[in-house]
Length: 145
Image 1 (tube, rainbow, N blue to C red):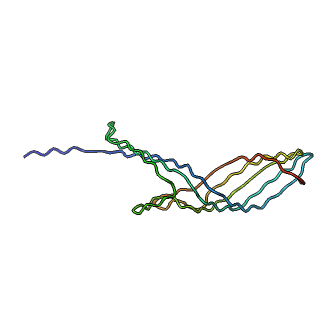
Image 2: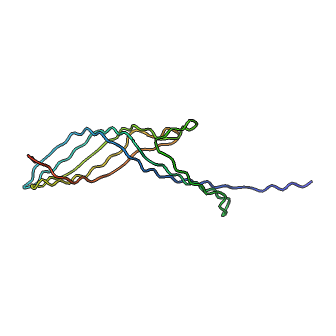
Image 3: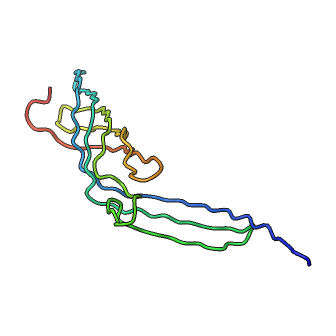
């Protein structure tokens, strides 16, 4: 009797992205100082976020050596908890926010903001924290000091 065994070496690769929409409620302590015709401001503080919509995409590829066995993509609503699934994103998150900006004499202002997630929003295994940067451009009426 002859038995031949073939070794199978599978390589599984998963890549994912998420596009999340949050309402953020920051509480910031700030400092302003005036230059000749500009007011500079810096602020820092916590922020509570509520995720109201979003999509998560995952692409999984299974290779046996150089041969692609399976390639599968899955898209789901990011905050939707399915009955048999513990792998979803929590709606509430706690972050820290830092901001720096300038207000010009004309009333035009520019502000750079950075938000860094502190709480893990992944309900299942693993860690997922929000990070985002954004630029605010606007106009302020009245006293600019």
